[in-house]
Image 1 (cartoon, rainbow, N blue to C red):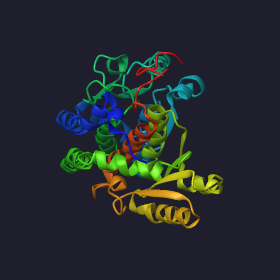
Image 2: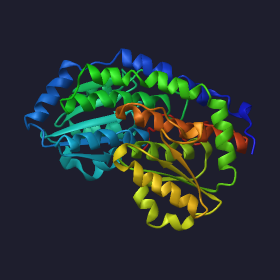
Image 3: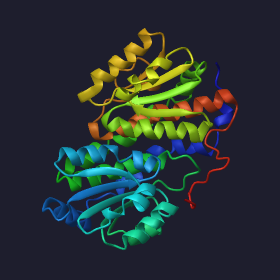
Length: 349
């Protein structure tokens, strides 16, 4: 099916194409500040017994790589949706807990309630795109992204958020070096190179997705960031149902839905489980299902990501999903990323 590209030529597309610039500007302003290093020192000395990572939507999904890295470093770290944290897990608000709160606006209803419930008992590292937001003003340490104004669906704010979370992660784990920033500097050109062929990517994705009625995104480990965010932005951009889950979970039930109308996007991910994910992709195709593999070895440019340091792989993995959102909009004849009922800032619980 041919994609109608003029229909997707709007503010959402312009936000996607401006991601390399947003990443570059965010990198230029990044540093391991002294207050952040002081909180990291307290963490290593045992002052904090646990680290709670919290956000809503893509802000929460972006925390998957950090949670894995903290656990690998020997810390107790868990992810909790902010709406659940403020109502059902308030015991986390104590001086033995370090909270990393991510919010693009820094002023959503859940963030406001978090700040009110915490009352500065737990130390808070706030990650936001808005310097004058309540989260920025009332966090013990604030780390800013510099994505600029975003029209609707999270794209450049998500990528820049992943970027700064990479720095925060390395500081908290005691691994921040000049190599950290050097590896992160590979992100803007890698994103730019991929987006240079966005029209071809959208046309290819449109052909693959033409018969699809059921969409699944699956992966493991750090790739769960792209899995969760990808399913969310497809729903937001195209008003189509998409489900994100682990590769293992997909075999437990949804695997029986395989057929011409079921499209599965499999993220190869890092080396630890890439073989398992590739096997799932191959098994789906062997059963007559439709699947594409996102990874360095994908035969199709639309789903191929550049060979890059492990820390920036999550940034690159979301790019093919962004192309899918444009492709789905192009074949359905609607502008991608234009909200009908939702708003950029969720002010009501």
